[in-house]
View 1 (cartoon, rainbow, N blue to C red):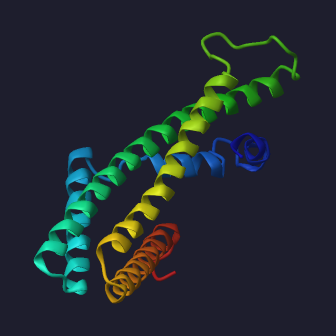
View 2 (view 1 turned 180 degrees about the vertical axis):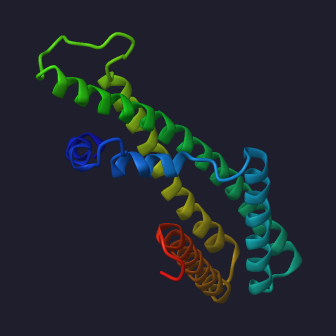
Length: 194
């Protein structure tokens, strides 16, 4: 998708401004806090979410311990997948920058083949494909992880508890999506109150 949309976006961007695809890659790969602080905050958030879920389910001690352990394992796997996703996005961002340079070089050189600016490496299609495949694999693993989370509930919980588990998960994700949308809207608004 980056390959298809990047030329059109590069042409419509203001001179000196990054096209929207580059801005999105920058946003996705930009650290919001220091890596250690963000990692600790993420673990704290997942632990708090897990505890709220376990309280809502009102489980016996044995089931609570089993489910807690399984969810903790899945949360650790999710953390690892988020790290892998960020690494894949960083690689794609670098390659997208190279692709953009290639497009500019082609425009300046009249799209003559074989004209390469000194010190600027052309984009390697096989490396780009490898980076895309890495990202696709991580995204598929994240989908599988969500399925695994629900399977843990199915394996350990009564039907009534499974319903609470599903409702909690849906409500939690809705609240998080709304919160992120509010935060995103707040960053985009150039004027206070808009």
